[in-house]
Image 1: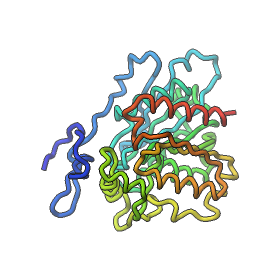
Image 2: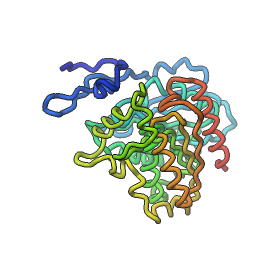
Image 3: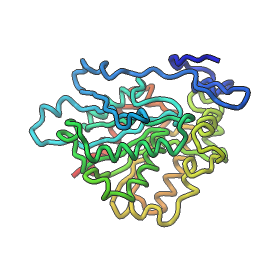
Image 4: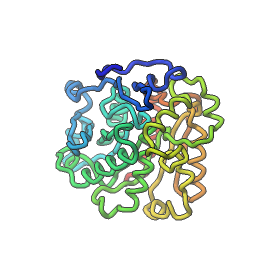
Length: 331
């Protein structure tokens, strides 16, 4: 077994889903991380003509941090002019990727400059070393950190009263669960005020296969055999995929969204019709709409899970959706 962390190479998910994710399953049933994705150092943004970027530790004992993106134009704006704050949670099935993963750079650039916003991307702990709810807890800790910012970019350029919580894939799952928690402690989070949730291709599941999953058996990005491994490695030990962290539909009660409705929060759910998780996402949307949540869903034609990490036009289209959503709410 290799003992060195190296760059993450693509493999065949159907024949070796563990290896595809950079793990090896040992004969005793344990799983070890043997590969990892490359990370972009913050210094690589130093010559960017449009962005300023910095990393700030949040909890050094957990190795969590935030990567903050600021449009250079914000510095040139009139004194006192502030931008909405977009808190972003990356994807990776809870087990891979980072706030510094190169795949997300196009999204960071486009959102920060074109919406525009001050963007805070969260580095949270990964499973299986830290199973759920560790990622939820880390992101809530960042929310508490943001409310009393010591960083000049946040105090000078970010309008904390117009904040949005966004996540992609597993980050969409995290944003949903963290959003529910945040809605129950809004006074404690002030002056940070969340105005909306943006869930992009949220990573949900269940024990029963859906039609969109069955169609994706030979998918090269996210076939069911890979999502099964992601949930196996990230859910609390001893639970199955009908746990509320994976399948939120089973924990939706009549009063669960009372506070979100009372706060006037809006939710945008986006994704792709070709996503293997599409049915789970549609079922989630319908369940929240039935509960009276102010939710808008936009599923683009075609595509696949993670399409915007590989196709720039998808990034720009997603940016336009988020821009429209944010600007419709910001006061």
